[in-house]
Image (cartoon, rainbow, N blue to C red; front, side):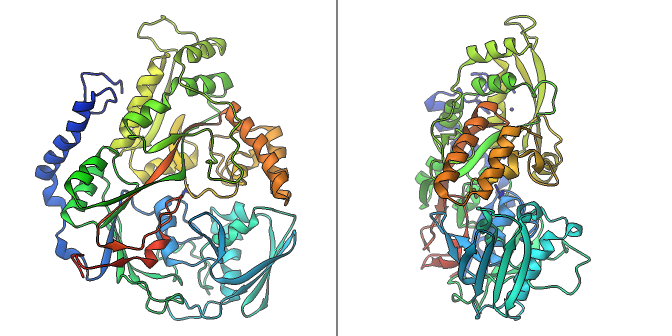
Length: 540
């Protein structure tokens, strides 16, 4: 799911700005990297810290909850996907494929029957059976457990165990996107259900076993020797948490990190190519970056204000100068790689003059023309990572040009995400990852999906959209669904409960001795189960 995500910029202040000349911009990363070598060298571990045969993956933030029934942040979902199997799993083209399910079929528009593999065991040696699948889903449905996945399973009326390795899922009504819920990780049936989520994640059945969690430092997984698809070629994985992007890159050069995906400052890519033997691969991804809006705010509740903010943001400039073209301007949540993507929606190109005009029409005139007084002030929340701070600064400067003052507030991940989930914001920026079925619009924008029932954190309400979203999830014909979600995308593009920013490109940086990694458009890491280390790895 999530995953599935600003200081005035002056040309004479090259640190965070986007107005650098090309020569100064190319020099600046080298200067900072040199300083970082001197100041941060003591923070690096040694190459000998690699356990033999382990691959070290650099990540920017701590996974918050590995139990798949409660995981919502991207790192938890991605790491958890290596520990836990699911009934189905999306492949590198976002197509659902059997995993624990040996076969599955739709009996009618409210009934699914799944036959499980009979050779799967949990990491503690217990066989995985239909009873475990039934328990996993029912534990998420139990109100007392407060699983964030509960709302996604609302259509599920009952699960019948019709054999030791066979289940029947019965829905209360037709629900076209329900097969997406077969991608949830399976845990063993528990005798005591009073302490969920537990402090220690339950056993999984995936290619890797959770070895240790050192909060704020690393998560270590070891290869599952009894994995039903065969033991992974690497001995294990270490997810090393390094919040500072520059330090991550320097650790890669030093050899204490072997693999980076997306948690890379765009300015650092040329330096990596010129100063290391890194293999770099860039592909268009589906991760959607956006500005989230609190629609209960007395100013932001006005659609013309939201439209003005969209006109005031120079997406192309930010993508070109700060992201170094590692993104594509987004029109909405669904990327062109999605089967339901609608191209013909209203767009909001950079146009400060139109932004000013809309703000005037909305009843927020500029009190002193081009003077220092703003039309109004808003707070903007983001993470305290360097690139995100610089993006925030760019947006602050752009909105200031149309008379809107932003107070930028930066936080570490846990605090920031907690505020977003509680609705404690005016504006914020986050990203949705792993979007497959367009029914996600229901989870994010239906008026009945206000937390804790979903992720409508901005409290958007539109009765026409509600009807379309309800229709979209009960219509099983793909052509009809596409027409419905085309209307949904056109409404949202005009109403702007989110301001679209960009679809991120996936960037994978690896040491040359790594073989077999297949990038996924949503940044999934499951193909790490198939990678191997050839001669040259420091721990081989």
